[in-house]
Length: 284
Image 1: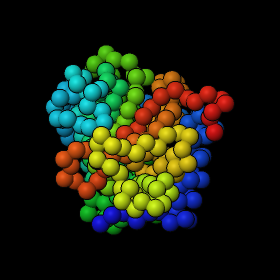
Image 2: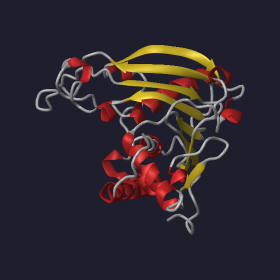
Image 3: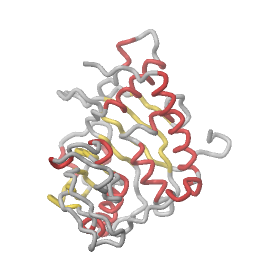
């Protein structure tokens, strides 16, 4: 079933939050206490209950042809990493003094620092799966504490840092994040709304096209700010905001939506382009 366009209230919420996030991208200090992540060593993942279930060296060719980014991946080396939040951490193990229960959240990504690419595959994080029923029990906010090291942006940064060290690559060379086969209903609802507003009389265009056709939502387009705050894009924004010096104060310049050729999955890709900030004259 095709995703419904986001309703006015929902779209307005994403627009307002995306405008705020855009301001933080251009000036990270505006994010206040959230401007910098305290998680800066990859060993912290294990300390906060994350278990590295699989890690393997990869070549770009190992994933077959990935439309939209294939030309960048050819010959690139990288690491595929799967982290599962599978260990309960007791109050004695960390300075916070809380028990952080295992949640079974999962992050599976491929980091190719030479190519400047993160391939985001299966990412079922705590924020996306909610607080009920995690790991077979009903969550009680009064008694249970979610691990503070829970966001995709933190897990991705620490994994990227480790991959860069292994490849002796430039840690600031991040050019693209590919969110493959996006199925989040909020993200798809915002995307459908953007395309509906773009092509109000052509309903068949409210769904992303098959590659090589594509829908590019650039930083100066009307729909960019609501797209920026969607669950599948805002993690990349926070990655850049909270590590702005590492990534040389880069921003998200566009989000491109498309289906891969021959795709049998009912969900599109989102290719997030990362680059330099727009000029003062053009940066809205």
